[in-house]
Image 1: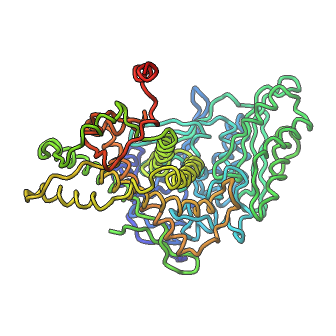
Image 2: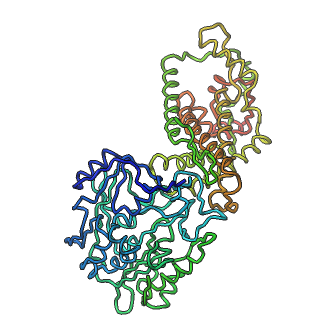
Image 3: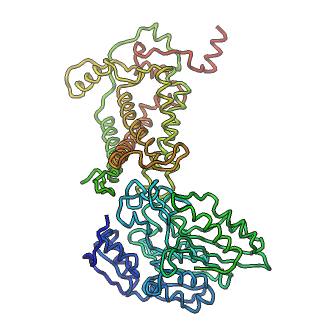
Length: 335
Length: 287
């Protein structure tokens, strides 16, 4: 069980000044190392004594991992770039406003000043049974405490749940999937680039992790191609407390139109499964159709097919249906 | 070194949750070690097989060229069980050693196939086959003592030829029964923890401690099956055992092999069950 402490536990703090040094340290320490980005997720784990790494590798001193760069193929965002910097960057605001809106929707201004985009997409599940240290599947055990007749599962998954019903809580992840972003990983075998949707894994593949990072791996940057620059974007996040909360559900879409018809579209939702879901079937169904309320209605119904509610999260099905409908049909968004 | 993994449940109880996963490697290494030791023994130490007892010429003359050993139904069961067993082992343990894929659905489906085929096998073997043929009898045990004594250089008569199944085969069958029924019985209950088409999910069916031991038993029997299946496959491909393996494919073994290793007095063949060769059929038709 979690033991709340006011102070940090003892660990070896390593502060590399370059990406090369960080990689070397990660290789050296392996699974004994904990990567510290903004610390918003890490400090909870460490102070609650739920994770007890021998060494913490603090990436805050690595300039290569910070900032937004324009490249010949779009933009590249260092994973240590804060969410405030992402939200305020003029190039992102101009071309990829979907990411601006998603970054602005994260938590509070104070948190966005400290939290990084790499941390936001890589943060762990917020299921309280898991965070409290109960021996659930995600923690290596043999049960999901949230998926029991009495489990508190209002915020949990309605899609692709397999044994574990925790959800991915990232706001920027669906936006990056909609923008067809690529994630650049530094691994022991060298640099590896994966599409944003492939960065995340569900419990069917790996029940103890939300992404493909293995011990020793590091997410170094996020590349956004120009493919969807200037498209019609839609982002909406529903949360309990508007001032500061994780999503109950969010949706991100990028659409290009030909006349009034949808020419191309990418749409993703999050907080409905353990990984953000790209809605490929919806994309196929609405391509070529007019961007209208009818198309949105059809898309919303299609999006929730296969959804299985738990005891207390049935509301997520109409919520997802309506968010997808609005993301397709367009309209006034709320966050 | 902990063989089990323990956790504290929400009520503060210390409960087992499953086996320590290094036992997978232990089982694999044990299986490999057995193969190496056995292969070395056969290659360097084992002499020619010696048997006691003879068979009357008129009995030999009555033995067909192809001695029926496994019925079509029995063979179908064996291979169906083999497919489900390999599926179960791969889906259970590959993810634990780093090969990640969605395994749960395949696992419980393969487990269901295995459970159904084993139930069928029990009924089939009990009422349509010679149920006791696979269980060790007094002669098996006496011959085992003879073989051990001869191995250590003591004076003992050669063992008699086998009945339908050698003692090793019977022993393996016993081990498979123990491990197989354990994984099936625990696995059926564990299906209450995941969503299947059979019954509503009910994680409260047992207490945390009972569930924990169920996972432990399932895991122990499962890793045991890794070694058992490795050994089974090894014997299946050994040159001197190939006639037995072939009989599990084609249903029969050769007359020569039968007479060399099996005692017609202990395993009475029934030629009618064998499909004759074209030549045999022509001879029969002609007569």
